[in-house]
Length: 272
Image 1 (cartoon, rainbow, N blue to C red):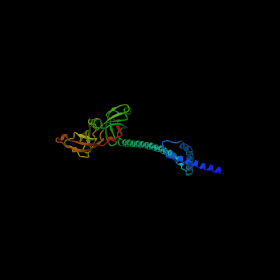
Image 2 (tube, one colour):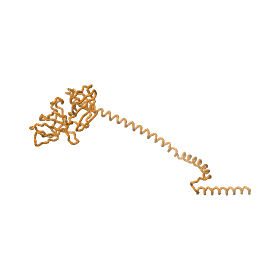
Image 3 (cartoon, rainbow, N blue to C red):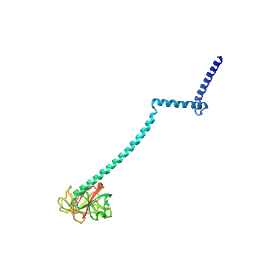
Image 4 (cartoon, one colour):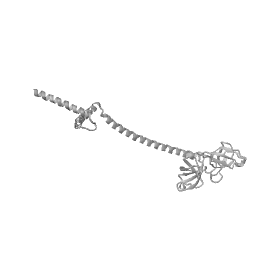
């Protein structure tokens, strides 16, 4: 019995010594890992991992990671659906624009029913005060010829100056070299309208005004039919301002065109 007590005392002493060594090892240089620390980690870490796993199972913490994967999958699905919706929206906008164009064509055809016309899209623009040329998607194969009159819903656009098989160039009335024989719709006074440099605005200039003619702001200007290019009675625009000069023969007026050339998309070509 004495022997058993002696063994027990020795075991307690060894245990105390082992704990003291562990304390010194843990408070020592952290940059160097002792053999005992490695041994301790090898024994304790698996146990701690197992305990943590069991704890997560009990408290349902492991479902967090599963939920994260589900959220990621749902997020990717929502992104795909959003992309599909954006594509559908673009397609609807295209259909809407095409319907608006067809409606504009119908209005043009009805408005100018007295003329034989060819509808066209504008496929290129060079709208500034020096050239002012449009390119349309119809050509000689569609019956287009040079000097044909080109119109829009609001009024006169210009005339054909060059034709290929499937396209044509239109010189607009904004061009400074494009003089249009015109008339005041109320008084029937003959004038000439041409393009002008007027800041950044697309305006026209009325010249060759008869000395006894009375021009008023707001008067409507239309084609006179003279000159062999433009059909008679097509609306050009309205007089915006009249400028008197020392010599009455040099007076002129500024005409605001009826057509919004920057937003123009569809036109009609009048066949002779």
